[in-house]
Length: 133
Image (tube, rainbow, N blue to C red):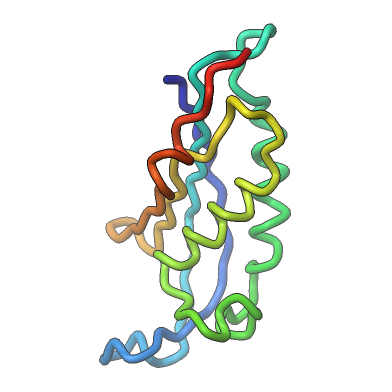
């Protein structure tokens, strides 16, 4: 299985719900996001996906978050804008952009500080695409 990962960042504020402590107050982070795709086979040109394409997809999603209060985004009206839920949101949106049967999102990791991260990996059947290249 091949895997590629890109790393990008965005800055945003959020307040978490019902966890107690200072994180329930509005505060901000310089989030780092890692998006990983996987495939059992490479294209005829010897790559899994052009990094520029994956960066473009990720940019489109992160631009919705950058310099915003995440609690104001529709998706987070009913879900806490935790790093876990941010990772799930990005995972699902990247997965929607993939058109090849042999390519899948393997993981999205969201770092809210240099020593705290959360990842979403989806269902195991989603992560391992069919080998068709």
